Image (cartoon, rainbow, N blue to C red; front, side, top):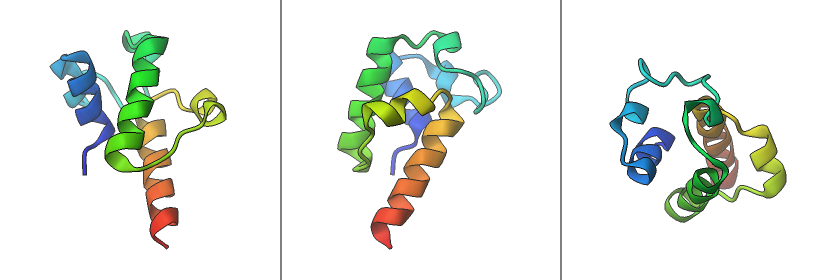
Length: 81
């Protein structure tokens, strides 16, 4: 299964997102150069690759890589139960 970091690297073409030392799990994605269009594309990739639906309301609560990772893990676990 792809991780949020892998999807961000694919989306941006920037390896910095692969390294938690450069972009920590708690860093706000907008502050690290991800714009609203990139966030929409990230959500589409998450839905397509990971099978986890993210609504507009959910997006308002997801700000960091850690937020996305927790959300995907929780929804994946709930879906598999």
